[in-house]
Amino acid sequence: MSVRSELALISEWIRPGTRVLDLGCGEGLLLRYLRDTRGVIGYGLEIDPDNIRGCVEKGIPVIQTNLDEGLKDFDPDSFDYVVMTQTLQAVRYPEHLLAEILRVGREGIVTFSNMGHWRCRMELALRGRMPVSGDAGLDWYNSPNIHLCTVRDFERLCTNAGIDILERTFIDDGHRRRTAASLLPNLLGEVALYRFKQAAGADS
Amino acid sequence: MPEQFPADCVGLVTPQRMTFEQPLELDCGRTLPSYELVYETYGELNADASNAILVCHALSGDHHAAGYHAADERKPGWWDACIGPGKPLDTNRFFVVCSNNLGGCRGSSGPVSTNPETGTPYGADFPMVTVPDWVRSQARLAEGLGITQWAAVVGGSLGGMQALQWAIDFPERVRHAVVIAAAPKLSAQNIAFNEVARQAILQDPEFYEGRYAEYGVVPRRGLSLARMLGHITYLSEDAMRAKFGRELREGKINFNYDVEFEVESYLRYQAENFVNHFDANTYLLMTRALDYFDPASTHDDNLAAALKHVTASFLVLSFTSDWRFPSNRSREIVRALQDGNKRVTYSEIEAPQGHDSFLMPIPIYRDLLRAYMARVAGEVSA
Image (cartoon, rainbow over all chains, first blue to last red; front, side):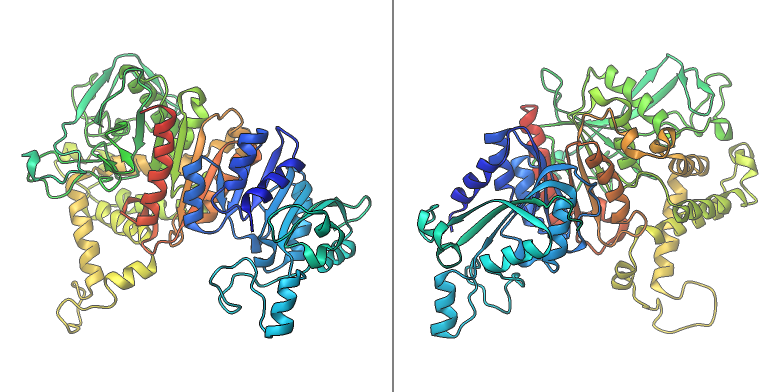
């Protein structure tokens, strides 16, 4: 998957000069990109010490946090956007965390590897193997990914949780945003990107 | 002979002294008509004086943070693990300053120094000092050294609290604050430990209400008990188990109250050592300064409000096994900074050594500190 195209697509959704919280920020690549291209300020939350050092080396403020404990140290509506790239599948309570994202942020942005992608389906249908998208060299038993989902699964969760999807886009296996992927996202989208907010009147 | 020191050691260092003739008003209401600070420096101050780092020491620390006073000195300064050429506080790039706090007993004005008004040691007459008093006293040291802004103020434990106070009291003079193994204020449990330590000293028959020097004695028993108690809180249970377990000194029990277990031997050794170089009145003063530290108290107990005018960027670090100032205390600082949209980075370092971890050469801790300080050096073009 192309990290750069994902960063660029997220960046298009973010207004300049806003405040962003990045959950599971890794080495701070997204926040650096947003800082440099959008003048965004914010924090990354990360659990891995090597990644934290990576953020520090880039001058990205990062706060060591276990996302499974929620975002209790953050006040409601304290960020314009709460972003979570390729992390939803690794948290213990995705539904709760989505609610937390929309408590702390006015809008949420989430990206994940779509398990409905045709290659994942082939993996299961033809080889009878569990797909382990996104984890080079990892197997089902040692992958941090415990809540893999498809495009359809995610949208169903949003409906049930009273979340309005504002925008969505998909990256196909050519690492580009393609019309085809938009027409059949659950089959052709390798990475799904969503921007969403709490539905009016909905109370998470 | 500097040849015998490792390449990443600052080598031989000589303490320096600065006298301040302008009276210093203290939080307790008293005024010091003049005072002295003893300090050490490592590295070179650059042309625009932008590469200076202030290191603040902990309860029983002093100005001797790195290097050796003599070629045959047994141990280097207390933070030699992190200060030196190529170390996290890289003396090839930074000018590092460390001073003995006011009220200390290692050369700065304090209970063992001479009261210029009487010609005798202050003893119990030395006024109570607070963390903000220390910051004010050090601000004049900065002025004396020609430093208008610290590239960073750095400290562990009580020193971390001092770094926090610096950022609050002199926002324009602190570019970065590095607050390690600290807390925004002491808990009731912390104060309780301090109180037991103080009572041990106060109830020693040789304390004489702090005037022991006039009687030619030292409240050794009280001070050593205080130190033993302190030491227990500096180590984690795991660290103690790993270091001593239940090892018996003589391999068998002797049915008496002499030293039987190795841990007893260790505590007595530490206490003995401490009593020989530390002053009981200073110990009382320092623990009280800790107890009183509470920058939020003047802002309706709202730490974020106390930090409102802070402009420094923060690095806050804690250690998993530190039960004296556990990680959630550091998180209180982080949360208050984050509430005010301040720049803050926080990491909880996995380390078994307890509160004392901040003094130790733990690789992930040193690497993170090194990475942060390298950014600071880049900013001030050190």
